[in-house]
Length: 215
Ligand code: Z5A
Image 1 (tube, helix red, strand yellow):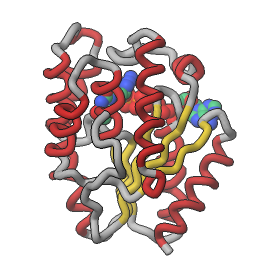
Image 2 (tube, protein in one colour; image 1 turned 90 degrees about the horizontal axis):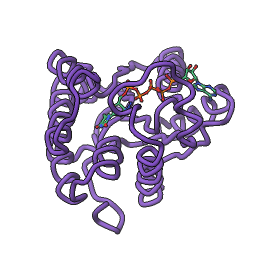
Image 3 (cartoon, helix red, strand yellow; image 1 turned 90 degrees about the vertical axis):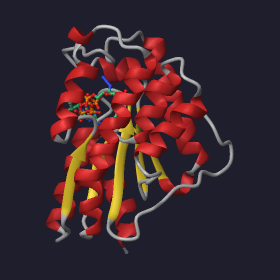
Image 4 (tube, protein in one colour; image 1 turned 120 degrees about the vertical axis):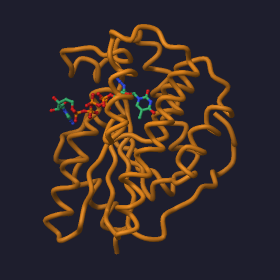
């Protein structure tokens, strides 16, 4: 991964942008929903979203990048499709919701590209990061919650396999290391939690950090 120092980036001046990252079955969707429910109950306006595929164009991209029927994609093709999904996601959902002062919670974002396409595929990290940051105007989450889980544990939480879940265990281990490195580089904007922990305990830890940000 590029830029060994503390990352730069753009942070929204309005609203709050929270991202959940981690490997398969780490509990991102579960925790994103739990945070959204809690914030809504606390009276906040919340937009819960995800990548890839939460826009009209994104749905088509998701079908291409995740369906086993697609078969092999060139590494650059896969990276560019994810980047296109992100651009559309920012334009149609994330930026308007932040501008309206919402709390935006996304299930996956740029780190997933840096981890899966960067560490998992043979793409020069600087070039990949440049494309992903360009596609998103370098907008960074105020907080990324990384749910860290040994890949063999996460993959057993699923019955079916899509194109990426079907990759070998070593692929997922490189992905996990990449996520951890991103968090290590920028502790101010990351919360790393052990995804083996109890669902409710994780939810409380997330709430505590988000409440600090909202205060
Ligand atoms: N991808 C990429 O390569 N590049 C990119 O830029 C982006 C994505 C954005 C999207 O898959 C795929 O796209 C993904 C990366 C790639 N790789 N794959 N495959 P997806 O959207 O279909 O799925 P996902 O993002 O991998 O998430 P998931 O599969 O839905 O898992 P999750 O959201 O982390 O977990 P969950 O649905 O909340 O929970 C899974 C199960 O575990 C469920 O039964 C829960 O009840 C259970 N669970 C949850 N938490 C716990 C705890 N704490 N203990 C025990 N059991 C738990």
